[in-house]
Image (tube, rainbow, N blue to C red; front, side, top):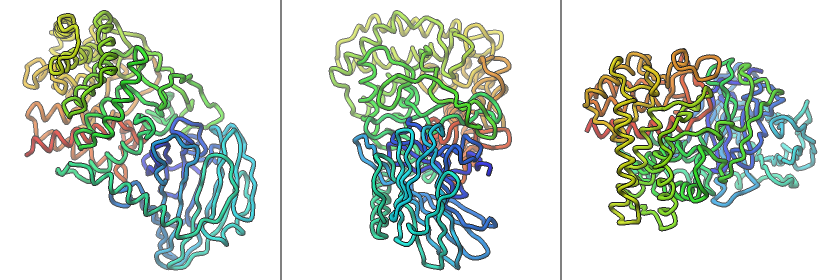
Length: 598
């Protein structure tokens, strides 16, 4: 059975890990105990085959129509199945685990027959360690225990009679529920140390449901956004929260690995890690909605990384940096897109822009009352002092190109941001700082970008100093205040981006044909860049275009409001899913556009 398209999935999670649930009732991706742990279900990158591991809960007959929605204000996913016999639904959720690292995690799957009657089938075939460890299956009187590869999964039935109906099939188990209107039944999947299965009472399941519902509605209720796109902003905020590892406050870029930026191609990366860039940009979105605690948690994580020494571009969610890139050749890949990669060799790249994103996040926190402590400020000042000597060098760039280093305009731009924000904080705090040196470095970066980043023949700022092509990262220039949005140089750059990178409101990062990146194949438009484009249009006073672009972009979300990294030629979602970059971009663009529209 071919896996459902990327965009036909919803996301559930417990703030330490997450699962993707397809519209056909299949859990196609799930890692435990953390986002970056080995997978238990990975059919999404095994072309729908059970060899990657999956867990289905769906009608026995195939002639059904399914619909998915979230319980409003929550991360509880409802999948509804309509067949000639009746209407049933499966509720999927993960009870929130807490702020301490946990080995044990639960996925609760509850079936309810709401009209008519029907037979539902529950199938579970875990494949531990990315499908590299075949599970041992122990069926007991009270449930099932799967073990293998140092992992374990326990099935705890939600009704006593279900345990006796469980049968072994192929590499997993199966049970059929014959349900009439008003009937319900379910399974609680528990990961962690192997345990004896037990029947979970119905009232216990509904208590878990109630606590999960109340947690999310309480959290969503803290948002101060009341603008035009409240539903979309709320869903994006919940998604960012779902992608945050609660024990450290660090968000992962996405919960998945190996999903292609172009179907059938090799651009299949592992995004289950924390990027300095993504996390820092999330601070802007979180503070814009009023979530100070989440912003404070990430800034604390960021302080710890800077205190350890020169920051890397990405980390595991616990702050470690061991990310060797491996290809899982035994997995078929999403729609044949191989190799399926885990780990990420881009971790060794030099990307100068991360200094600017980190200092800008710190500055935004500072303006919101999150004043840095002495140790944190001291670590950042040492980093800025080192940057004074090292900013003027080629780097790999924001897009993690594997074609070599260049004098990238965006990297220099964000070095300017780093110096500028550090100077501003130091002046207000009256804290120790080598302000003359920092100011000289800031001015030198500014003058260099204006002299070498600007191409007078093309009348545009360029991707790097040795080219005449544009890059969507340039859209960030007016956003960070480097250039006035009405400056003629910026307006002609925006025109160039319109001409070369915009396709019916969607924005490409760059053109791989004109800017070779060391990889074969093409890619889709980059959703984050589209939201940056909206912001740039607002600042340039092109409000009608900005609103139309934003509204068009909303039509590219999936059925429950989620975005992958990219949008394909026919509107399909591409890349890892859902992508934090895309959702924080939506939030920031919605806030900026709503304010401009009054």
